[in-house]
Length: 220
Image (cartoon, rainbow, N blue to C red; front, side):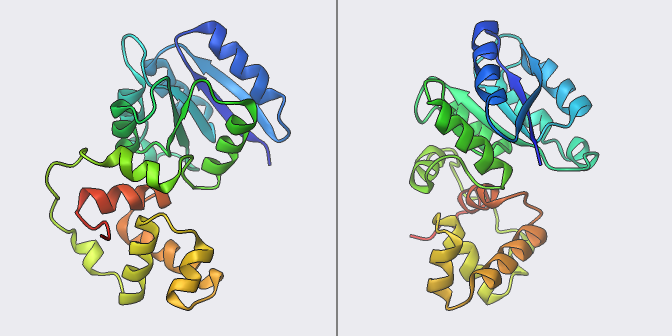
């Protein structure tokens, strides 16, 4: 299966450079490019890419607002398949990148990343995982939530085992690590993660981490 990619950056030279890198990878294809956030939102609706590489700082509509609009519930419900957004930034632990992750992005990359890291990031988010280490993701989200939101009823509906798996995912543990922690097989852990995502209405493991921070459910 070929992973379709949409490039979003206001600098044409940068866009074309990334296009060359992505198109050179086996199983990947750039299907479109946008110079601003508004165009990106339109092209996501028209082209239905698998992955969007989104510059966070652009004139007119920036990458944060574009990410928010891409993941609006009504717009997302019309899609036949999920779209993943990776934010591109020049600053490590960028507050704008953190906000974009809250809105639905699956992580961020520095613009100076290597072609190999870019390739791996696209494949990683396409599989539903984050493109930055769990510790970095937690550090990025620290301070984003001034006060914990009330615990949703949906969370209270999780089983004890699902809550145990939820806490482990929120800590950034892999399925293999969780399996050892809860004394279950990896396939059973995957089943639990799937049930958690379905019950909480979340898209992927990244959003479990965001959900945990938002509601003060991050294990100490």
